[in-house]
Amino acid sequence: MASYDIDALIKKSIEAKAHAYCPYSKFPVGAALITKDGTVYTGCNVENASYPLSLCAERTAMVKAISEGHREFRAIAVATDMEHWAAPCGACRQCLLEFGSDWDVIMSKPDLTYLLKKTGELLPHGFTPDKLTTFQEGKK
Image (cartoon, rainbow, N blue to C red; front, top):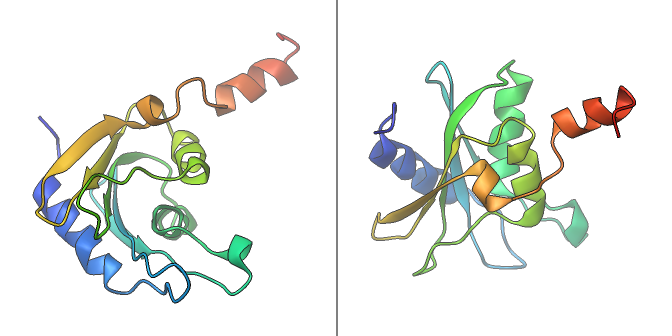
């Protein structure tokens, strides 16, 4: 049982999706991230004519939370208009994994059904801070 309201988090991600700036892909995405203390940060995708400079909804929400001092998260809900669950892209998976491999990623559909996975499940064998520390300490 989750220690937060999954349905409320999904609804926040849907609300965030309405603010997406996606004139090129026409693919709006919203995210709602809940911190360990229960604070919720939302984000949407923000595209750019120089495509690589675009920012995903998940990373937008994370940057907002991190810039306010948060480093521990319970879950992130992601909403799209697709009729199947859309998982975060590879870059977002790596960014989520930076803050732990055992917190929830909720991928929702417009009908409010969802698929819940742990961050570590979305990027098995990912590059995590502990691997870098081990290398720097000479324990290759």
